[in-house]
Image 1 (spheres, rainbow, N blue to C red):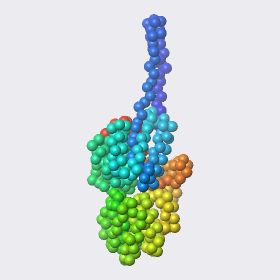
Image 2: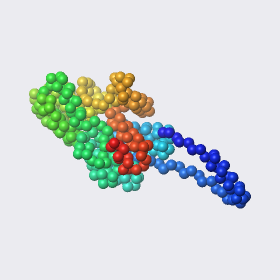
Image 3: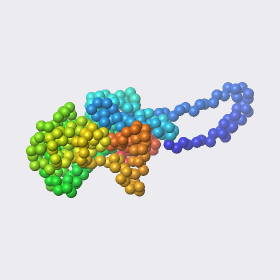
Image 4: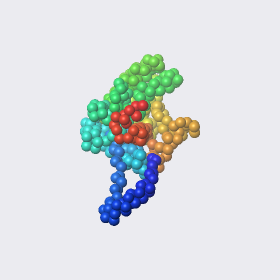
Length: 353
């Protein structure tokens, strides 16, 4: 942040001279006005730091804390300290709504980053729309921004983008018959819709369509049906535990067809938890996870490398797609505050335009 100095010596001298001319008593009665500290800019963050979606929310929380520290060490936002108020939603819609109301009414934040999950984001949309406060979600479901909501934005790639990229690759590989298995969460349901919507555009037929709940711990029944089908590949669209369970169950059933995961697989911990079953999984992701492969003159190379190096040095763990979403979300708000100041409406307009 730039610090703007002010030339005050001449003013002080002039004041002293005037007081001396008035008389000694006036000089002794003069009390200098101390400069008040600038108002803190408060931003809320609704993140699944604990609970089943902690793999999303923990790197997001780490990221916003890292940014908060860096901004304040550099002098704040135009001199204003930044305070990020993190609320742990535990990935629960009811808790997320309660936390959002607190951030808006009690903490009076200027904008909100998050939530981490699609379902919890959908739950707070009516709240932020009514309160007229900008929200930049870290969740991916297309329904978050389609149809357009005036006060709601998101940083992850759209579900349709991810589905199309998967299908492009499948067509290149000559795959035409697939099975899909999706979680019944908001993210899983939205992904299922996009997979079904775009399959015909790539001459792909969905021969089996299965689902599972967020608490399910075994998908062998659904996978047994898929194994007996004509499917040449399987797409699993979900987050957290379901991604690992499907991979392990496929290995247990000796299924040989390739497994595709959604862009929600973008955390190396998922692959590590899956162990040998994680070998060969194919999924679309942002450039953050492949930054080392980018050309030196690529427009995103510098910022992605900076984030990756800073995060990994500070937390001693690999970056994830999800932390990257939080980085983008918070910096959108910070840039808006730099340019237009602490006005919710102007922040919204700046982010949109």
